[in-house]
Image 1 (tube, helix red, strand yellow):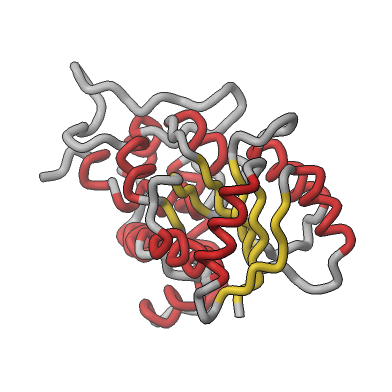
Image 2 (cartoon, rainbow, N blue to C red; image 1 turned 60 degrees about the vertical axis):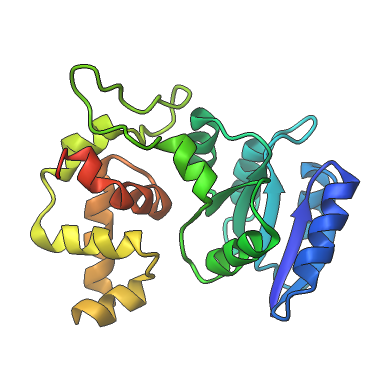
Length: 238
């Protein structure tokens, strides 16, 4: 059973999501909270592990990205997955959330089934980005960088560049094995699954993943997985 906490400042949204997701046979909604401080206090007090937090981006006072950073800093041993949820998706916001350590990004135009699938994916270690959020990040028809081809907008100063420019610079230096690893990351595979698929030791896979992140100039598997899905466009491949 996936233990889920929903954090949103609108009671109607919290109750609606709780009703929908709580009706799933494998999801148990154990908390409905209005803001970041309430979440941090809940995590301080709870004795049972929380598997996934569905966290609204635009919370009053302290926004979701800041709450996520505080959560990771305050509970470094916590293995809780965090999905960012919002009604509005802007490139800089998605990049900022991923750079802060979000395990996915879901827009509120998603169906209940899509949100439930995102919760399950995050719990299983699979990168989650809703179709609409992916379209915001990389609009259809955009290809590569160069004359007349704008790169994806960068996030605020200090955040990793998840745009096409950095990826193009690093992707060309990936070895054949690293490209295989990146492809499997894009399919949402965990290290153990990648090791089994490629018949490698898990420690070897971890080394390759670290090299891939460094070459692509990204800070998380999530960002690398998103780039993997868009690699043909980034490299101007047919």
